[in-house]
Image 1 (cartoon, rainbow, N blue to C red):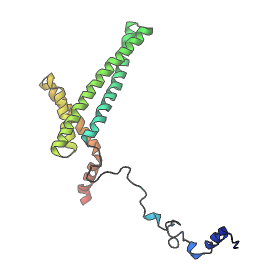
Image 2: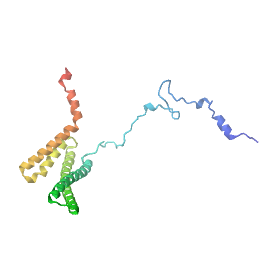
Image 3: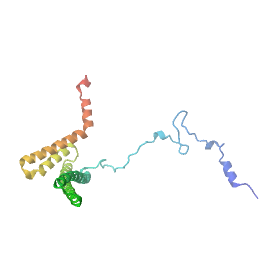
Image 4: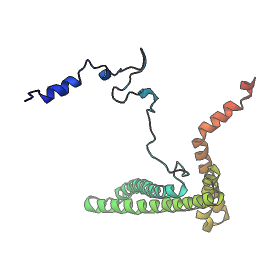
Length: 206
């Protein structure tokens, strides 16, 4: 009867003295470390991968329609916050002059905050809906989304919003929309403008 221990046989067949078990942890001397398991150089692997995988042919950034929802919601919340702060200030001033105290003053403050907050939120929300609508239509009609769409959409929003107040106020609203859009486009494209200035600088060509 053979009394040989199978565990001992198994351990002996995979001894550390076996040349096949000595996997080098370096590709060559003084070079990058290799994996002792897969035997590859991790230097050739990219260290960073994209956070999202986009289908082929799909834009890598959200379009006007996708951004419209966040813009409208953000405008409403911003308007509610600004209007609430303004209403609280006006309520404090009004209740102080009227001599209100206690529960009456708190009720009046809440009324001022809610009324002015909802009015401002409604105004900014309507402007955001108009701007987003014009932006989506222009992007669809022109087939691209650039600074021209932003300027035209903002100008059209100002014109439409003040269209019922007369030609003078309508022109003022369009001018305000155009100015805000122009400032935003210049700020967002400041890197492109800097590269353009460096490329066509006459002093540099000399």
